[in-house]
Structure formats: C-alpha cells, structure tokens
Length: 143
Image (cartoon, rainbow, N blue to C red; front, side, top):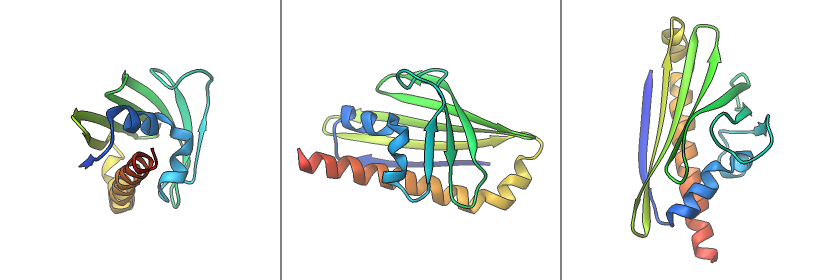
C-alpha cells in the first residue's frame, strides 16, 4: 500500500519544520495520534525512536531512517510481515511551504494490513497533514 498527500502551508519553512519534528506534541495537532513518547534523549534526528499510539491501532515503535534538517525525515515501524515507512517532506516556496506526507507498507502481510487498516491509515495521514497546516498557520497569525 502507498498513500501520499500534499498541501501548501502558509507559514515559514522554519515554523513548519519546528512543528513537524516536535513529535511529542502531535496529539495537540491531530486526533489521529493519542500519544507519542520519545524513547531516547537528545535532539530529534537520525536514529531517534518513538512509541506512537493511534486510536483503533496497536502502538508502534518508529525509528528515524532518513533525516535532512529543515527538509525531510523518514521513519520506519516494523511488525511481523510488514515494514511501514512514513515520509515527511518540505519544499519551501517563499512565504509558503509545500508539505508532502507519504506512507508505504511492504512485506508479505502488507496486503492484509492494507485491507484491514488501509482506509483508516489514509484518513489518519490526511488528518495529520491538515492538523499540521492548521497549527502552523495559526501560529503564524499569532506572531
């Protein structure tokens, strides 16, 4: 399964990046995430790990596998038979930022997981993008 969503955010790249990597505050941004717990100390970056809880889904451990400060990060969650990769990409364009979120699931159990959770997963990724947009644009109007 592959899902991708893109939208423009009317905020600076620095604002969007700061909110995007503040993963422990994601539950304030979207109802699709109920809890995020960092599993390591230090700044968020390559190799960082977090446990994420989402409604109607089992908790998952995510590990950052790609990190380009200010531009993108990818992370993976592994369960028996499925590797899920989430991508978070920013493309600055002046006063706006194009945000692209991707989610890929691969492995022998991926078709079954897609059947069981595909619609919910797509809805959650959309909610996350829209929540980040709202948070960043609201933050911009407060400054």
